[in-house]
Image (tube, rainbow, N blue to C red; front, side, top):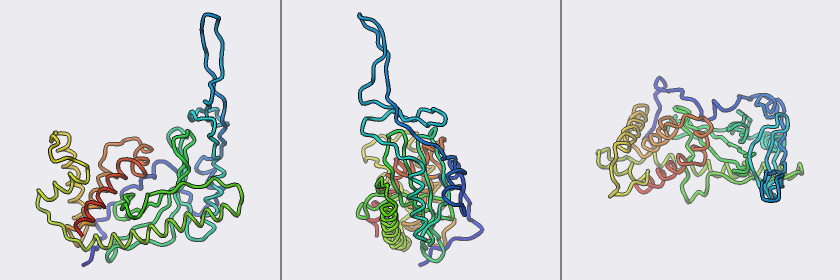
Length: 319
């Protein structure tokens, strides 16, 4: 069987990070930092609070509470604890430089969002995955750091389907988690070792994923309405006795529409692969998350990522 994509039906939808950052292909890391607007520092400052009591009024130090501040603008980023230490944008860039220096990836986009609370880099790996004859999946590493204490510095492996710009962040449980925490290292040699660890992780995940996607493309799925409804309900965690609301019926209609659109661009229709891509089309392009940053987080590690993982698990049972 093949899963060929008809060229004239390629939709050219935007990549999930396209509105958040700047393209930096072909630039040095220093140039990318400046272009992406990340040439600034973060400082941790003690927080204070005003008090009024019977003895008078004044200001006291807020024990173990600090603010993270963008130093060039004095912009407030978040409230953190005593143990928190800011990871500067320059330090993140040094790891990117080490990753690029291994020759397996190039920096493509960089930027900040959520009022500079979060910073990200995308690095495109030099090779692609191929599902069937010509369904091409680009391999990306997304590195993300939070300056507000809401998350650690992490690297996510992110397949991106070229035909529809679907971010395929779902993970089969046996493959592990979609992301690893990155070590905060100062030494240049340690940074190179960390870069190798990140690339090794990504390459292992992409190899397993490509094999699994190709298996999915061989599995035919019965398109009986009740069968598809049952698959969708299981993927979205709906219980058999759960009330069917108008809102859910409307959402299910959108999901089915996304699946039909995936079938329309596939030569081999009604497979586990087309249904999975229908689900990710819905999470990438149909959900009403207007804020680009929230949408990006949702796809990377939020509800959309969970739904994509559920889809892989449910469809795996049909192999």
